[in-house]
Length: 450
Image (cartoon, rainbow, N blue to C red; front, side):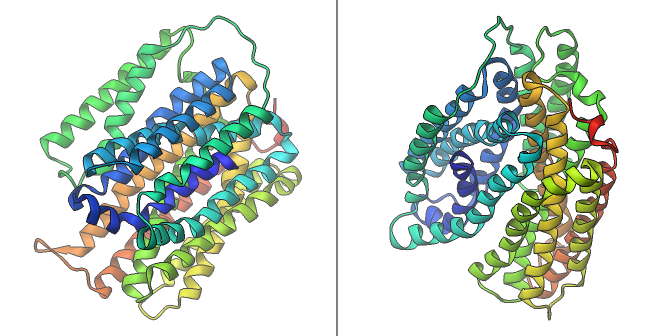
């Protein structure tokens, strides 16, 4: 929970500090890269860390991640320009790429099947708390002290998390000779970096059909094709291809992909809708959205009792149905809606997310032994990152299509209300696909667990 808090708090604390950062360092046009580069570095490093953890153990990998996050935080705090801050955010992202999946993998290692959902609920609660504390701290530091403290606050937390893991977490790793798949790791990192970069910046920094966009996607896809061929002959592939031949793993990754997209759609456009259309302030908008991340850990903590009684598949289908209900209710929101209604609908979505995300991840972890659990967990987390990147591109394109007319952008409440409604329609469609993906899980729990 301490290690997870590093990533969770950092993902929310910086948002309210952006105006102060831009005022201090300049580079308003470049500030979106503070988020993009972090997400990119985190996403592409997850599969590599996951494989290394299966080879050498979870402890050294998560400690490496905490160390990188610490170094990145210190450098960010002393950044002298926007380009320097963007570069140091990449270092933070590389650290986060190890911390988040390793925390979840360790839970799969040291807790029984009956205990995992409850403990995953504890980890999810960190995100719920951070969704409220993060923006508040960011605002306090920016207004009363300095925006640099949004990074310096990570220093004692990194030392505390590292010290606790060194003292309290002990694992037994069979030390055997390994052959590291350097070629596969390079091709996977290059391919995923370019594809995610194209998705994050397409339609913004450059048009989708521009030579730059086509070149980035082309080289990225060719690298991924080459990666597949390289993995077929690798002695110890960084991402074993058998993962894509097992229904429970494909279904779990597909659900995680949709979870990332739905989460991104709501976290990006609910605050905008509440502020522009309903006229509320940023803090109120943040609290309305926070109900989603409060409902999630509550349901995740209860999911263990549910899937032990009715199975992974039925629990995930139930959760997916609740998500569909919650997102469908958001279609009723308009210019005269209440903020309370927004919070209730987000809470319903959060409950569904907790019931669909935790069982599918635990089912995937339970289908393999220790030596493959890191890769399986990493693949699930990587799928969520890809879903977030695709969500950025998809929802951004939908909103821009509504807001842009005749070469000018209409930012009136009426236009934003219509754009938000179209985004929510897309979120409902993705939620339905999530339910279909959950249906890929085996019907009986004994068909999953090894």
